[in-house]
Every structure is written in C-alpha cells, then in structure tokens.
Length: 119
Image (cartoon, rainbow, N blue to C red):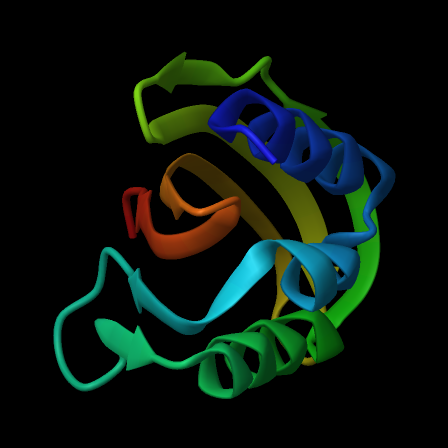
C-alpha cells in the first residue's frame, strides 16, 4: 500500500470507530509510538504493546459523545490528521481529546506514530 492508501484507510477506520482493524492490518510489528506525556508512558515499542495500550484506553470509554476526523495530509512517507473526540469515561466523566496524529509508513506499514495534544 502507498502512504496515501494507508492514510485513507486509517482515517476511514477512525471515523467508524474501528481502530483495532488499523493495528491488525496496517502496523509493523516494530512500530514505535510517542504520546504527549512525560514519563514511562511517553514511548511504546512493538505492535503488541501499542495495541494493548490502545485497548486499555478504549476499555475506559463508557460512551463516545462525538468524533471528528479530518482528511489526511500526506507528504512523502508521512501523513497526519486531526482527531477530536468527546467521551464519557468510566469513573471520570466527560473528557475531550483533540489531537494531531502523525504517522510514518515504510513498505506499506506504519512504523512510527506520535500524538500531539494538550493535557
């Protein structure tokens, strides 16, 4: 897959809430993920660890109130898009997550992802 094809598929799956298909089909086993936090949660290496972290977050979601995903912007092997979601989180309540998602693609698979958001 080209970077544009990977970007289009990721955005389509994010819009439908089918995030885990992304991990199953579009990620390298050696993916590296960075979050906009400090400490040990900042970097995650490997598909299993990245997927498990996402599952842990999604398990906290009681209800999705809204989700807006922009069109992807592609440059070479990189793409980005905006993902803005509002949730009811279990035991926490309302939470809004407005982030820029950045990805690098190599040989048709995502090898790097980073999320930029305010805490």
